[in-house]
Image (cartoon, rainbow, N blue to C red):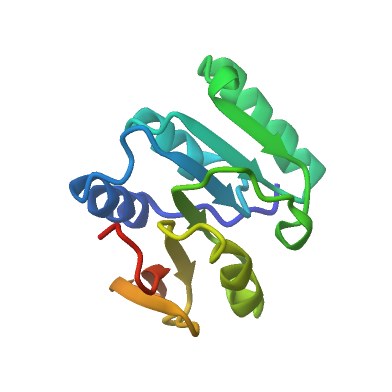
Amino acid sequence: MATRPTSEMVRTAIFNSLESRGLLEGAVVADLFAGSGALGIEALSRGATHAHFVEADPKAAATIRQNLDVLALGAEATVHPSAVERWELPQTLDVVLADPPYGWSGWEELLGRLATFPDVVVAAESDRHITADGWQVVATKRHGGTVVTQLRPRGANRT
């Protein structure tokens, strides 16, 4: 499979940061560009109540379903075999984990769509810092060639 999984070090850093701010317990999360589903599964293991896995590659989406079945997490998850740009947003969304291919240029459009959730926190993995109009950078950290930027809509109630 041609996925680029998040390294264990980066994944641990992301989740320790989100968990320390109380953002995972009871949260509805989205794992965008999900690959194997490791980020969404980690969110469920740390207290999220539901995870949306969005993955355009049919083989990768099937792998996510298999991983969820093996871990008995199917009832707590929805797999969306769709491109992120065409994914129909759910009613509720608290945390978004986005790990697109490096060099992806759709950040403005994605964040524009996610701005409909006034308290959402986005953890964006990229090869560069991510900024967008109407969004506040909450935290940013470089891990080798990976930059993790956490953003929220300006005026959000969450930290």
